[in-house]
Image (cartoon, rainbow, N blue to C red; front, side):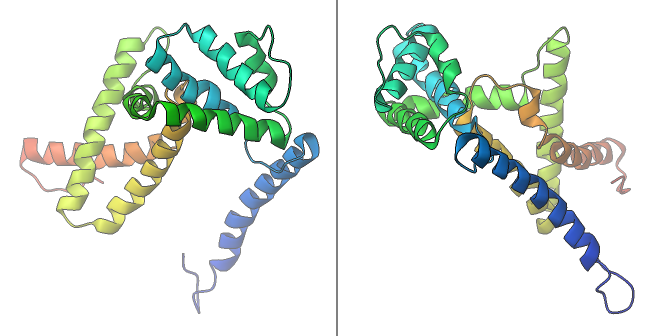
Length: 229
C-alpha cells in the first residue's frame, strides 16, 4: 500500500481497515462478558467441540445411538458442574449453548476426555469433516454441487502446484496459509454438522487458486503461454 510523496499515504486506510474489525470484535467480546461473565468471541465454540466433534468421535468409537451419546455427554457435563444427572436426555445439550465460564470449562474438559479416550477415531473422523467442509452440499442440486466442488478443488490443487512450480512462493503462501488456517481450525471443532457457512472463508481463496489451475489447463490444451490471470 503506497501513497504519494513519502509513501505514508496508506497509513490512514490501513488504520481504518484494522480499527473497524477490532471495534466490532471488541463490542462482541464485551457483549459476551456482560451476558455470560466471560469475554469470549464465540459462546458456542466449546459446545461445538463437545456435541459435534467429540460426539462424532464417541459415536464412531462406540456405535451407540447418537441420542444416547448426546445424553451421556450432557450427563458428564452436569456431573462436572455438581448437578443432578438423573433422567438426563439428549435434549439437555440444548441448555448448554451459552453460559458461565464454569459451563464452558466443563464442555471443554468433557470433549478432551472423549478425544483422549478415542484418539484413533479422532483422526479417522477427519475425512468426514473434509468431505462436509469442502465437498458436500444440500438440497436439490446435491450431485451437481458435489461435482462443482470437486472440480473447484482439482483446479485449485493444479493452480497451487503451478505457482510452486514457477517459484511464485509468496503468491502460493498467501493463498495456502489462510486456507490451511481456516480448514484446520474448523476440523478441530467439526466433523459433522458442517454446512456451506464453514467454507465461506476459504471459497474465495480456492477460486483464485482454481483460476491459476484453469489457466494452466488451457495453456496445455492450446499450447499458448498467455497469462489469463
